[in-house]
Length: 624
Ligand code: F6R
Image 1 (cartoon, protein in one colour):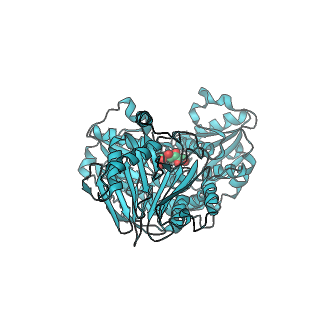
Image 2 (image 1 turned 120 degrees about the vertical axis):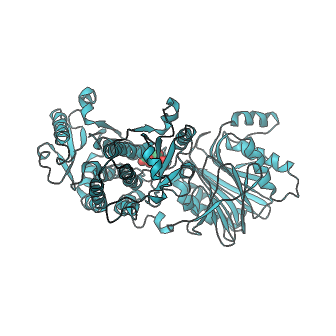
């Protein structure tokens, strides 16, 4: 939530910062702003609404204005927490003497107390934000640091950071320091980019990827100062610290639309490749699983007597599917829990519990807090994550990276499918090391898993009728989704996609629950999407879902059936039939989810919504 960028170097800072904000806009789009240092002046501009409003506002500036000429600057794109999303509350926020500009991601929890203290000292606030406290505190701290102190702004930032509670990434510039940007990080993302004669700070690498692919991972409770030639890291206490250098293995083109109208369409289309990349090198030709980078020994895994999966939103749905697979393949009890609920109910964990934290961004605060709780209870934590070097994998005992590449659209698609691929790998690996499944059974599933990218590509080739159907459904008041077994989380995911993109009432149900209440929602013409399990899997499951479809149809529902090729039983009950290739039951979500993503994307487009940046949402939820 909130995207932040900082730049020092030889280029026009405004261009670099605006381009960085364009790439970070998925993190929040309530307002945007910049502050540029030039010849002892600090020029700022900020506007409510999307980045386009800011871009328009700065476009009139000439090179004579500092804002157009400076080569040091910071920029922010906001997801509002404290204060309405208007111009006044947009970042940057300035100190009273207008010498310091600050941008912030996160929530300063003791802001009320700090504000009271500052107001008592005579400070007049210009906004309703928690961030503004940091700007005033920083100005005061800067004044107290002796003028001849090296890295004076960094020292002032350390003093301020020690006073703040909560989660924050702060960036600051001072009008007297033409080549310095200072940042502080606690429980909120910040990464540095190492260039030639220029350096960068940002919420994630996509902001500077077109300038450098050399990144520096910063730790918790660290302050960083960038100048054109150096990145200097210290702890909040002032001790020297080091970031971890790493190379980003994708380039700027991966975060561009590449000819698609929306990132979401591109990301849906990338799914076969993303799943293939996630499996690559992790399956041997003998049908075994190789997961060396897991950093948990086989002995550790043999000791596991319980698995907990923690995640939010779409990642939680991946966790629900993982439960079916892990319990079936390993016979180890597996629970799935919303990360935001986990630590508040005092779950029973110990050294023999494996906690799997699933997160695309690696920064979701609810998941991070649940993970920390698990670690406090001595459980072992494995992260399944898409974003290299982020907090969740850093704080876990082991990590399995999904290789979806950057996911820019706010609604998760390719990350979800790669999370599924990853949890299947983990489940099969656990089965392999624990010897619960016989080796030949593991290799049979491995072989089927390897064929899944092709199966996903097959589904994508047949989506035109789904698009047509979507245009037709765009005027509906609600859409219901039904599924059983692994089809149930798929139904939940289909409903979530529709809610977040099309702003329609959509609900997913376990089909067996219908008669216990939800069937009352069915009226003449109510669209009901049913995810039908394979007739080749457990016979009873298939038959039961077909009966559920008959029940809703008898009450007037318009049925949209997702069923395997060759499943003729569903034909008489389908108003619309969407075919997917035949797959083993547990792997089916890799194909059955795809039409639901396309459906939601197309319905939202037909309703005139911005599918990449749905209202009220942000890609990375870095506050609880
Ligand atoms: C929905 C969606 C969200 C995320 C959730 C977790 O399309 O994207 O529900 O899945 O916010 O995010 P990560 O995976 O980054 O922890």
